[in-house]
Length: 275
Image (cartoon, rainbow, N blue to C red; front, side, top):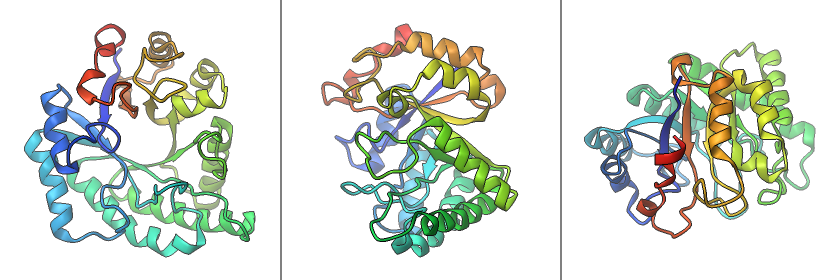
């Protein structure tokens, strides 16, 4: 049974303009990529910008396996789903994201929940998240896509409310129960969970069947595997033994790290021994 690796081109090959990164990834041996929202603050980019983005992938021969819904990753911000100020902006971008996914064959769409907002009740934000995630799931379901819910670590994202496997799964269950959506899954980012001192092997053994996607980086500096404290050989073995594999129709592991030397092409040696 096998795992397969894709490269997150919003955090890797950042030494290049965004539209040049798919070709660089292909030259480095990757055939699949994922992105955060690639259009900055524009929830509804121009047709020309969307065409340029998809053409860059097509021309490079790189498939898109993961894409964020419109989000806000400016300093301190962590998504739009539950943020009243940006609720309309998120909803405006749902069909754009789903359209790109349909066009490229991408079937994993990540919906970052957003920070707790001072002066806004937790219940109000939960209600908005329910509305937005329900709408996103319904739109994604039209093309057979999955909406992902991600847990982040509280060290780097202190106002983000979903910081554990349990919290992410609880939100998925809450939205599914209220909306009937069956296409919500957990984006298991091993870096964020490890920063929260979560037992990664327990999480994998207990919940791998609910993983829609996996992302990796080493701790504590978010570098490539073998640059920090995590045993990725053992983690990859645990994932395959738990059934998170290409043969199951999943098995994608997104490289979402910061190269320890700052140069992307210097950061791939670990793959020879650990993949």
